[in-house]
Length: 209
Image (cartoon, rainbow, N blue to C red; front, side, top):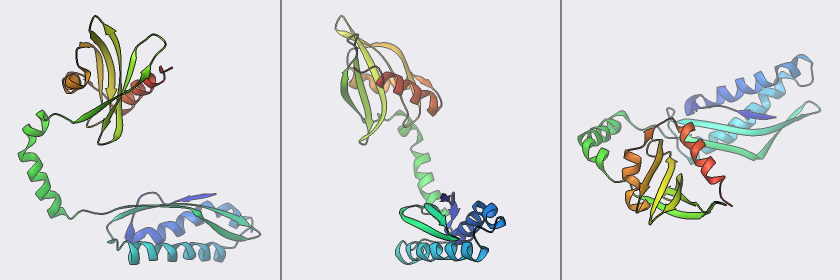
């Protein structure tokens, strides 16, 4: 079985772990396959471990957000945590004043940010059975899009999509320099939801030989 706390503030993770474990094992408790005190013991065992991590090691504030996932087994009335599967995510709360200061800075540069060129990397991934060329688009080393190009008389007819900084689908357009014209193509593209852009990216990648 798997316990997942969901997103919860660090000051309340212990109660959430305990409530979640009791909720998951409610039927087993009713069938007397496990006792309530064993559930409470197991919750306390895990919470003690998490306290060491959150408070003593990560030094999280109570308002920071965490998420915990871990597998466990129930056998012969005993709950055993599989700590090798323990996953913890922590999201540190940023003070309001710091947010306001940074927000003010960003707003003051709104026009500059809107017009700034995004430093995409364009990497050739391969060709399709029809001779089209597939390129991966990366931003800060992370793949965020794909384009497919059909060579035509020294130019390329391209289409594709990116998910960052905002999701955009690039409609079929002729270009001479994909990398050099990519920002223009994205500015002129169609703004969509992330799922639509991801669907186009996957469809293009699936065309590789």
